[in-house]
Each structure stands twice: as C-alpha cells, then as structure tokens.
Length: 520
Image (cartoon, rainbow, N blue to C red; front, side, top):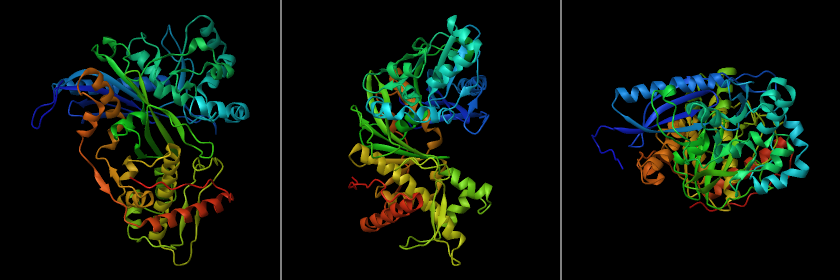
C-alpha cells in the first residue's frame, strides 16, 4: 500500500472518468485521495419534442476518449503511475448498438425522457406496490426497457440486428466499458441497473418478470457485476495502455462515497441544477413508504459481494431557479449577487414574501408534476433583498422536504450531512438550510470532483491504494461547518408555515404529516 506524505511527490493514482448528462470529466485521483488536474468536454443534449430527450452515443464516447487521453498524458508528464481506471456515469440513459460495427443504431434515450410516461402510468395499479417492495422504486415515468422494446418493433434494421445476434443494449456505463475494453465486456452494475427500473434489490438480479412484461428481450440484458468486481482491462489501442477497469458506479452513488456516506445515517446533499439528497442505510434496505413520495431505495454500492443500501430523493429546482431569476428574467445580475442580497435580510417570523420553487413540478413530499412556482405575500414594501431571501428560503424548504422524506423513510435522523455542488457556494443558503434541518452541515471543499473521487476510492481500495473507503474519505480536508442558529421552536414554526403554504398552493389540505426526529 502506498501513502503520500507531506512534501512527497505523488506517484500512483486512479484514472477516474465521470460521464455526466451535459459533459464528461476525467482526471487522475492521487494516492493522497485528491484529484489531479481534471479535463472536461461538454456534450449536447437534444429535445426532438416536448417529451423526448436524446444524445449521440458516439459523441459520449469521443468526449470520454478525449478527456481520458488528456488525463493520461498529463499523468505521464508528471510521473504518475495509473494503477486502475474507475468510471462514474449518468444513470438510466440507454442505447442500442451493433456488436459487429461497434456503432449505435439510434440516438441514446436520456434519463430525463418522458415519452412513455402515460403508457407506464397504466401499469401502476397492478405493479406499483410490487415494484416498491422488490425494486425500491415505483413504476415511474421512464423505462429504458420499454424504449428498447419499442425501437426493436419500430425499426427493421434494429430488429434484424437482434435476430442475427448483433444487437447490444446497455446504459452509459455498459457502452463505455464495452468501448474501453475493445468490445470484450458487456456488463452493468447495481448502481446503474437500479435506476433503469429493473433491478431486484435483495437478490442482486434482474427483475425478469417486469422487464419481460415491458416486451424487452431478456437475451439483451447485460451481465450484472458488483460495482468493484472488475471489468477487464483497457484495450491498449484506446488509451495507449492496458490497465484494469476496476470500478464502475452511477454518479450520485459515487458522490455519496466521496461525501462520506458510508455508514447508516450518513448522507449528502448535492446542489446543482436540481438537488439530490441521499443517505446510507446499511446492509438491509430501507424500503420506500407509500405515504412519502419521491424517495427511492437503491444499492448505494455493492462492494466485495455485499450490498450497502441507500435512499435518495431529488428536486429539479435549485440552481435552475437562480438561473431563471438571473439569466432569464434579469432580476439579479448573478446568483452570487442574489445570495448577497438575501444575506441582508435577517431571519424574522412573519416575513411576507414567500417563494414556492416548483418550476418543474414537485416530487416530495407529494408527486405533483403539474405544479407551478409562485411568489406570494408581495406588498409595496417588498424589496429586491426580500425577494432574494424568499427564493433562498423556498429552495432550502424544498430541499428540507427531501431531507425529511429520507429521514422519515429511514425511521431515524441523519447522523451526518455533508453538502456540495455549485449552488452550495452560497453561505446564506447553507445557513438557512442548517437552520431548517437543525443539523450542522459540512460544506466539503471539493465537491466538483465528488463523483470522480468516489468511484476512484472504490477502485483504489480494490487495487490496494487504500485499506478502506473510510481511510480515503477521512484523509480529505474538512470543509466549513454551518451550525443551526435558531431554536427548535422557531424551526418547527417555519416548517409548519411552509407546509401550510405548500398545501394552499397545491390546493391539497391533506399533505402527509411528518413526525419530527431529534437530530443527533
């Protein structure tokens, strides 16, 4: 095992690739646990119609290849030995390609695609309860399996490829592993498979009954392997070197590792365009509750043949609300300026301006995809600073709904919550969030590389760079801690006011009540 001591030149590392929805990053994560120089290339996302979201699989591959080669070149120039490769990817984005030519047959369907939402809704009455119990998630509004079945039926060239044994199916991880290994390995991992809506949580197996019901041919399913099981070695013609591809994870799962969500109750909140809240729940899954919408159970990671489960909730409105106010409406010159304005307004009960940030619907505490946003309580005395504060309050309350939903589903409070993502750079927002959760929030120093580092740590443990994930994570610099600054009574009052506002806005007087948990 190699350790990097103060003043010593790092000599070993893991090449980590993070293929997200709008861009691909690659960089070497050193044996200190820190990321070396990271290279980035954007990727286009197309919207052929209001419901469809697509990408070019070859653009995903060429972007990945470009940034990976640049990272390998920089490592060589700096004398760093790459001992393994780790991959983190956007989840539930799927594609079909030809095994012989290596070329995609159609555009990839992105995880945001909703073209089959109405068709899937027809399955809810019979399947919803079953899928929640065995997959940890509802029928949902997307299905890569239904998409693939429809493409095989609609395109003769895809059907012919299937008949002739040339057709391959997979999510982004499957596609990149297949390309990186020169077509030798066709696999996926639990943290990617679960988001596709076809993974049996407790059995580590495909839900063949459900997948078959959607019309998907079972012979096209990739092999399931643990996230750290190893996926062969890279084709020397691809990156100029043959290195073990040691780990592959969904991006949010990798971020949860990097933010220290390893033991039950430890969690993260990542603020970006939207916000993800996730918590580790141990080696027994905490299944979703029917009275809490939008919280899904999933494999947090499958390591060494053991599944460590997690819960996750998501809101689509965080940074998107700030961009809407600043870029689209021009009310503030920048999100930073909005945060500065908000910081001028002290916390006080009865402040009239309120903002419900439902710009793309609501998922938690209730599923209202048709919901819209609203400013309320405006008067002639309302200032720009009041509006800014209302926006941050609204975002923080909506994220607190996610935190409450995950905590209630666990049946216990978070023991630790670390925050990251670009929007978490707002001190006023994180302070408001700490006040509303009643938890100290640690804002980590390098959240931009969280997905890169998390999957690299998993690979590095396998390859002997670290003895455990805990060793790699706890060696990283600690971030700033935001302590709650209001009383429990004030917190409960603000949360109750928010609940009343949401009920009124949604015209739903019976939103699910919440049983408070005492924070640790």
